[in-house]
Image 1: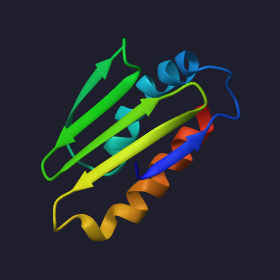
Image 2: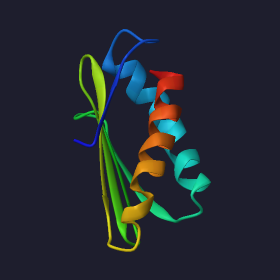
Image 3: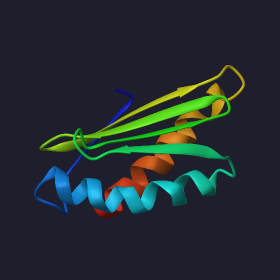
Image 4: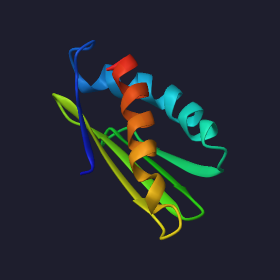
Length: 93
């Protein structure tokens, strides 16, 4: 995992997952890219895939785990992308 965001505003993964489902499309839009988002209710996982990138957010009992894979051209932006995701997740979890 590239990033771990511990819960501070919620008590369980269901609340974080539900809040993040609404938030993730907004975060993707901030970067101006198109992505297909897949939400797995049973596993509490959100996957986003687009041209040159994929991201997964998995909600455990105590934290949200984020994994971002970028193609060669986007790798220099990885820090900025993770920072933005972390900031947005901390608002809801």
